[in-house]
Length: 72
Image 1 (tube, rainbow, N blue to C red):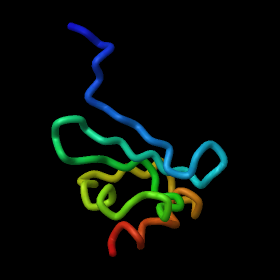
Image 2: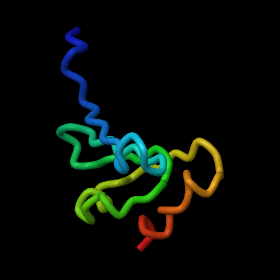
Image 3: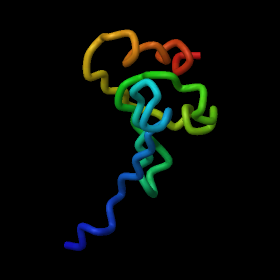
Image 4: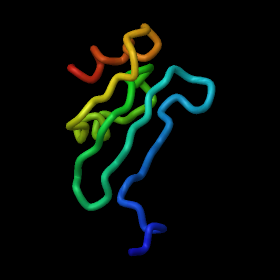
């Protein structure tokens, strides 16, 4: 099995200094998952619409503040 061809395409939404939010595209699946919901404004709406699963590491506000944008 060739592990160099991962189906996971992670993207740190706010960069290294932003609120925690990791958007992970699943290649070939037209869906994504989100690990923590920090500031999500930099993420295009089309990317948010592909999110099917959300994982929160804990409920501090910087990990949760973008949840309302995701629901909209």
